[in-house]
Image 1 (tube, rainbow, N blue to C red):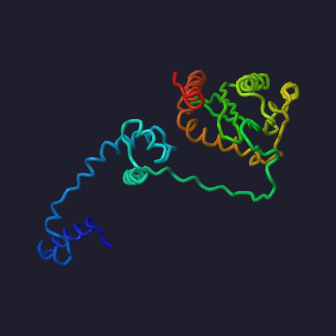
Image 2 (image 1 turned 45 degrees about the vertical axis):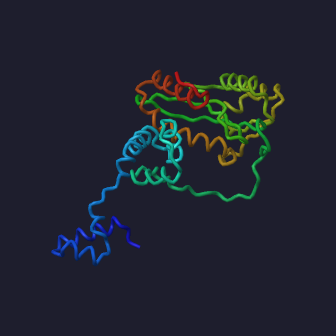
Image 3 (image 1 turned 180 degrees about the horizontal axis):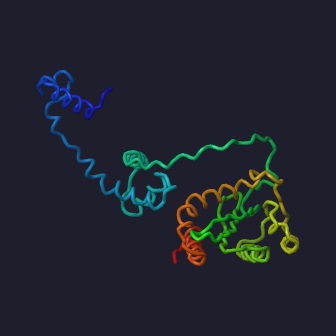
Length: 259
């Protein structure tokens, strides 16, 4: 079924080819009064679309569902359907990622959690400033709730710093049953393993070359890199600026406050 706007365009095309407006409206079955109709919806949606485009430029990896939450805070309350319509109208779709080849496995994940605060997984994420200096981020995630417990940022993070971060989390939330990580030197150091044993925590090291066994942290790190590091990290001109910027992001993401 052809829409009314499309039929109005057909009438305009027929009129350009020499057909009278009355005859074109009769053939295409469009009321002549409809030719002068101008939708007020465009003017009504214009400020919302402008704000949506502004938020999309600020958060390039956010889809219309997340942008709709920001719009609601600004006073633009709307349904999911309207948000999706305006999102498509403004052509703000997030580029699709190229799917990666999945490795089929029927084996269950070792020490899978059955509740909150049972298994914590942690790993490193690296980024570089505009001048080539490295930023190193330690992320800790609760595998059951998928909550990012903390993000520690510095130029270099060794095992004593990892122990310090984990000690702070244990004092705030209590000790988990397991700590899952890869076999990196910071995670298998004698000092860290001694501390883990003293706290009554078991380790759940993943098999070498199988990062999917640490799926919760890999998922969190992917979103952290996609939505934060790729957007803001490389814009830091120097190491000190990069640390300040990363800590500001951590305050917003983890602690919910802004500096």
